Image (cartoon, rainbow, N blue to C red; front, side, top):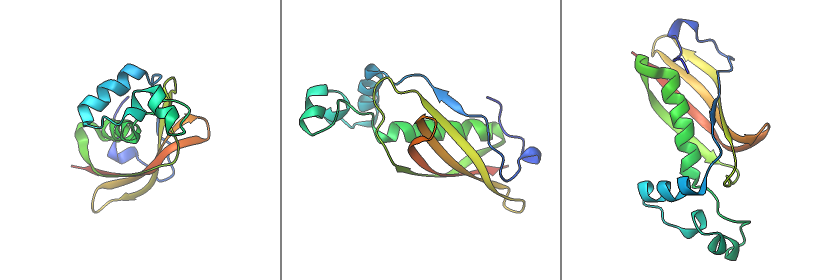
Length: 138
């Protein structure tokens, strides 16, 4: 993925998505270790089922991390992600492929910022995480 050139960013522009491969259970175990969130609903099917879930679910912060990755790749070395705000709207399960999308909602020529609407979906139209990001250009 190439970073966005400041001069070519336009409000309303839908940007190239970041598609993450299917979430694997081992990835959830590694994320638990990295994040310190060892809640067994993320790694043990029996525990997840005992609390009413269909099986293990991914940490919400994992999908947020993927959206942060998308924002970071979009700005590249031309700036930085100055704000990332998300809301969790659905569960991510092992086997789900996440498509992370971004649309330009505003561009401030004075502050040199680009506002994005961001979302991660497990299938077209099934958004599991959504929010906003701000890219600040140098």
